[in-house]
Length: 319
Image (cartoon, rainbow, N blue to C red; front, side, top):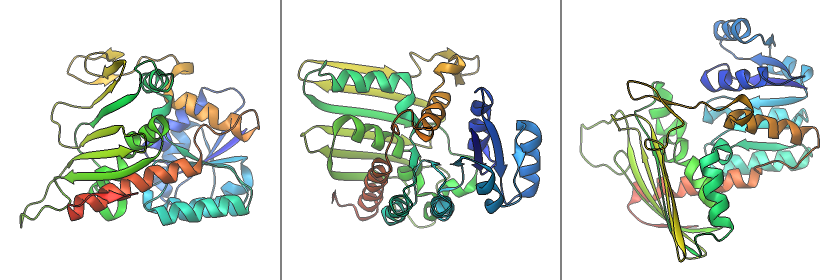
């Protein structure tokens, strides 16, 4: 299987490392930054493509690891080239862009898969399974928390480019909640940055709290932060009519390193990114269906877009 990675930044490196652990996978790479591309090819052992056209002509599948604002342009070209494509989350900057990508995928009869890797983390898989199997009864309330410090790359903090914390970070939780609880109906969100009226005040990070009411009646609370000096942390707390399930990465981290950083000690076959990319390649080869559909990726963006609108206007937004 020949896979072409578009975008040689941090996430492109993560994906390349996982492909390198798979038998029979050849990695190609392209980036408009030629120095970064050269370094990537040297460090990752990838083959160098001179253009997107060159890349599409050389590979069986495409893996898009670019900033959100350019997802649509590259994905549309991949669809026109009829190359099955994995696109990093969030799927696109807006619902309209997601729809254009889906329309092209259907017209070209070419697979498009959003990379919602949280579904492959064992803690989130287990919590999903417990809730879906009815082990806590009828779910009434789910609280999720994710975040730490602000990203180093400035484009993440430019809301027009990244969508800010509600699209770039909270979309993880929004997708997991939709997968687990079903159809979202009402979104209410508050943010430190969005809707802030204090003149002359700029925040390097952001903090947001989003409430989503689901068709079932379950209420979800999503806490997202780029303002936590204590470092990265995720939590799950789900309450139902017959019990509860909870997880806290600071209490139950797979490996805690002196100094407070938390890393994982998964074997390569259990690593969430390895499992996500393996699932994608199995779908490309026809062995299985995609783990996440493009429509599900668009729904997560729709919730994030509603949260951004709510945080900006101060009003709840109906889906």
